[in-house]
Length: 446
Image (cartoon, rainbow, N blue to C red; front, side):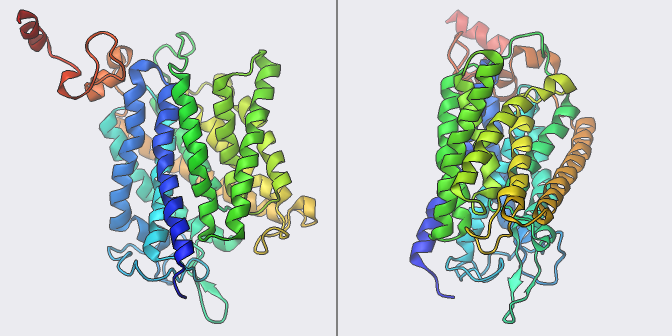
């Protein structure tokens, strides 16, 4: 197939939009933490960009999208030459596309980058930075790369129309257009596991742990919303009608979820908050991600509104069940991802996407709903179990949590020798962020 300049241009733009989501997430999470944890929270996202980008070139792309048709349906081919023909047109993934392999690989890389970054919100304020970096490297290798193969690798389409080498969930017919399972359920389940491993923050449910900067939260939510158009519409792998459908559904579902969250807040608490608006928008983005190219716009509105309300209610589960999910990764990403994935079983229709099945409300019965439940449940279980084991191993060997005294003083100072704000003369960055006792004495003598 010949390369399409238009499709390639759109995919390059979409790739940049998805990359922007990780700094957006850093702002979103950074504003939600206490001031003494802001930089560490943002760095937990930024380090994912560095680690995952390098691993993706070395072996990540091959594990997720191995072109060897004899590879397992559970993982791709481990190869250092997975991108050696990157300037040629993409000829696998269920059929040919008019974009170079290298552009497709770059686009998928950004999904791999943001997924572990999402996990970080569940363990804010208390995580050793070096252990977090090691966790990210191992986790994407044993969890994200294989799961991406399960969901996103549609195999090689042969001349007779048959497809071989697809991931097992893709072959089962699980419909996940842009990552409700591979990204959000995956990250949410892993976040729950790590919250259990690291335990509760010092003073949880006793000390106030309110977001220190709602302005940053709103800025981050806005950047996420903007970048998400690349995330969802870019998953069409071309500038076409399917991309347009995903674009529209992303917008209206997010808007409806924002409203749904605020309605629950107003009824439950008597206030509609800025934090609720930002969280509701993210919940809508999460929920529409798997469904954005399989449902009509009216259904996207319903899905978004329902997701906003359910996620607003679900964030309180941590208090009832006793796990400290610092920034509500479970309540938003795990629950929102499940809502979005299962909603396809009700609202999915071949009228908007001929490759999709009809859901329950379109006369398709419960078949599609069962397939979607298989996808959501299998990714949830695999991610949770593997992350729980990995987290306990790292905790018992390297140590995963900072000391109690360090947590009380502030993780930014202890882990990075910096503070986000110049409040007491110690802040700023670089070597001037923190002075040793002797250095302070010397400074005072001058």
